[in-house]
Image 1 (cartoon, rainbow, N blue to C red):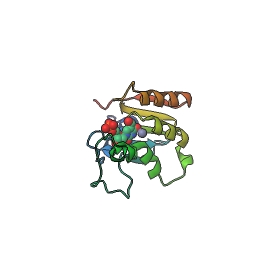
Image 2 (image 1 turned 90 degrees about the horizontal axis):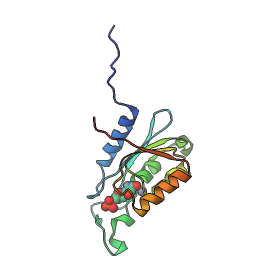
Image 3 (image 1 turned 60 degrees about the horizontal axis):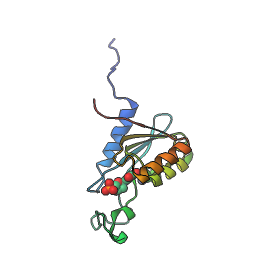
Image 4 (image 1 turned 90 degrees about the vertical axis):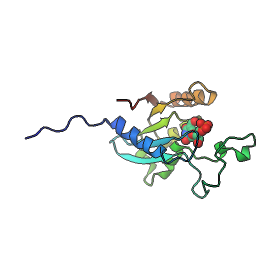
Length: 156
Ligand SMILES: O=c1[nH]c(=O)n([C@H]2C[C@H](O)[C@@H](COP(=O)(O)O)O2)cc1CO
Ligand SMILES: [Zn+2]
């Protein structure tokens, strides 16, 4: 009888690759972010990426930054983490203690939202805004709310 296949990818790699796949749908020319929420039983609850509200045509959108807030993408885009939570059709109770896999460390607004959704852990790939004010606030929120975070890499 043949033995089972052993060299399968880990749960971390599986969920992070799902987050990366979601990020590939992002129309943001500068930063594409994906998020995948996995529950404590290793089931994917939801995925999301950064994009415009669904009623807003993303072809007809200022995908840049501007001095005028009316024309700055940051004021319109829904972040990947928020979309992953909003895309979930089940009960938020299912998110208790769940892990969010994100391709970029969450901003402080997402950190608050993840806490409030009951997320227990953040696993991230990139932290390119590390040390910025927003990033420090985000880490302060997660620390004070007892949400752990750790970085992983997808390199072999
Ligand atoms: O937590 C996050 N989640 C998320 O989806 N984003 C998105 C919002 C923007 O579309 C993009 C950031 O754009 P930029 O790097 O050009 O400032 O990434 C950004 C962050 C954190 O910066
Ligand atoms: Zn965010």
